View 1 (tube, one colour):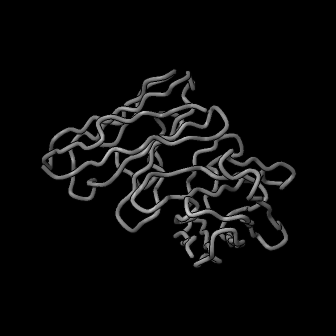
View 2 (tube, chains in turn blue, yellow):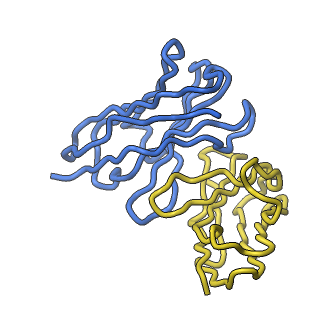
View 3 (cartoon, chains in turn blue, green):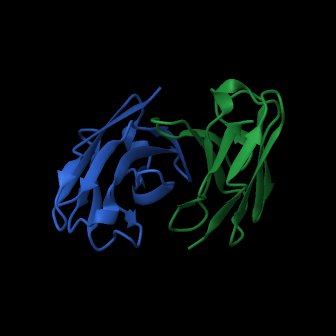
Length: 120
Length: 107
């Protein structure tokens, strides 16, 4: 059974930057695309970003694509979300999530989440 | 983007009763649909994918049907541990999008 563990959340001022990390274990990391999904307080789920297994392709939601980037280090089984020019509406729990199959973007393993609060 | 609309927003059901949750896509998505269960303070858990394939860890009382634009999640006999929020998600188009959720609460 695989496991994901996020870190790097915290309180940041509007316009600031933060890098989230996600450590993966228990599965063949390079075989699966990895995602970031966020959930604003009391709200639903919003997909944010995907990195393919090899890391050669990334896709981001329009709401973040000019400000966030996603990357991975397959030698360390890590995926990252670099966030810049943060806004109040980026405040959320950020989850790292694994795709269940190489060609199926349903998310079968989730981390516990890391909280990002954007506030002055 | 594909808008996923779930109904109802809240479903009040007595233990042992059947619950039927709906999810509608604004464009046809074949069967590229997943359902998740989320309990307070927890991460979501994948319940079904490809519209009807149940994941291990969820019992057979959970089932999913549908293709194209209209999908249904059925819980045949609600147990206490099933009271939660349920989300649908499409993975046919970018960006991947979720419904707004259906809260299944105790009647």
